[in-house]
Image 1 (tube, rainbow, N blue to C red):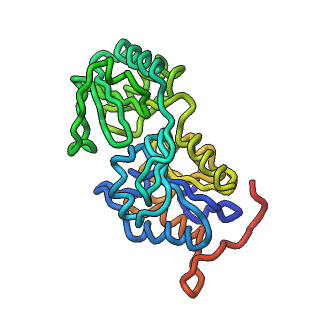
Image 2: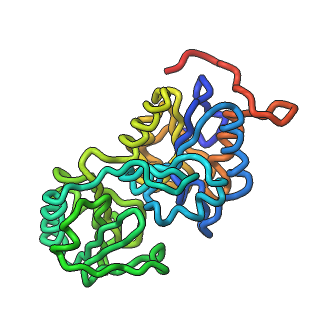
Length: 290
């Protein structure tokens, strides 16, 4: 396992995919000027970048602004495609109603005390007991009965417990609903999350890359949480930040500086070096792609 950003793929990537919170977003919810400059290098060199996050579109306004309202985001762990320029949802992959109802029933039976909510692009709806987290401090939770809450397709189903950690919730939920939905956590406090079966950061990233004509081998990915692992496994080269979840650190070959240390920026600076005139140029080819 390397901690040096000098461990680079043999060819300059054409697509950079990165998680946000905990990866390029710091603990104070800011993105450093160095990181923003590094992503600008990618574009100047003719590459593309995509932000791949567990956030829903409704929590992307600050990110859209700091990135200059350009680029594309994959939101809610693959459930949405979101245009940062127009702030419009361009793709949605939802859990069907019958699957949603059965998933909710099984979760309540397997995890007593869990409360449930559905996260839409611009709205959060929950049962009578759902407890909003820090990210939703300014959000009004629309309280619905089960018939209404589970009566329409759900981009993301989330469950919160008054005591159990995210890891504990995932260990209980995955065996009982993993055949119905893709269940995971992104380190939300006492939170477990589900999207439609087959939907993940990897599946959405693969669709996005195909639309660009870019292969996995020419994609580099960055992440910090277990829900990033499918995306990181799909990409030709993947880096975990030093503050990543232990499961992620154990799974990847390359570890770089933490989100507080601009670890992602350091890699992008090496991948997309600046020419003397300030333009980002291609990195010299050093061997066959693999």
